[in-house]
Structure formats: C-alpha cells, structure tokens
Length: 165
Image (cartoon, rainbow, N blue to C red; front, top):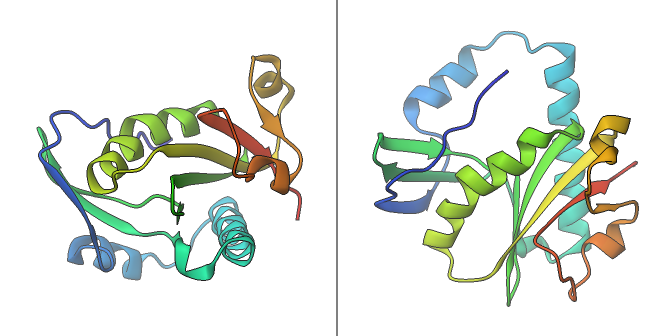
C-alpha cells in the first residue's frame, strides 16, 4: 500500500509540464503493470473523459503535475483530475473501490497544494466503481448520480460518487 505524503511547512507550489525526469524515467522503465493497476488507470481515464465531456474540456485537467517544496524538500504530486471553474475548483480522486485513504490523501496532500496555487474554494470528490458495505456504514455522503454530485449548488466539502459507466 502506497502512503501519500503529508504536507508540512509548505513554502511554494506550482503546476509544471509533465513529470520530473526521475519519475518519467521510472514510468518508462515499468514493463508490466498488474491487472489491478491497469484496471485502475483505465477507470481513471474513463472518469477523466466523462468529466471533460460534462464540463468545458479546457477546465478539466487529467493528471496535472505539481512541484512544491515543504519541510521535507522539493517534491512532486499528481492529482487524478482537477476541474477549475469560475468560482471553485474540484479535486477528484479515482478509486475502483471506495477507500478511506482517498479522503486523507485529498485533504493532507492535494488541498494544501491547490490552496497555495489557486485562490478559490475547493470541493473534494472520490469517484469509485465499487462500494464495500464497511465504507457505507459510516456517515458518508455518497451520490449515485453524477449530475447530483457535480451540481453548482452543493453545501458539502467531501463526497463520494458511486459511478457505474
């Protein structure tokens, strides 16, 4: 299980074009992804396409790279999807199966970075294809309909969209 970095003492953050050289080299050298990894990336691509069709294509960024420096040094992060609209920005995390760690990753890694770069309110959404009963037992806001989850007049900060393509 990959642990995400928790931002501490953020000094600066900015969007950059493409991955840093070491990450690009590592990505190019990966010969085979597992079936689970391939399925996860396929689902992420599907969600990104759905969102770019729903919103203006120019407002949707699939896998943007962010470079930043915090107390641990210069690092990079890559949220799954960002949607920047006039009055707010969505940070989207795609998981085939809903995970508690997605919310922590959004709040502890991506929110501080995006707040630093973009001066707009932020909305967080985990998009998943499968829900486990244990995830649903807690007091969670779960949408079954994309239009309900993505409406302009929402009064929540974090939710899950159960998306079945």
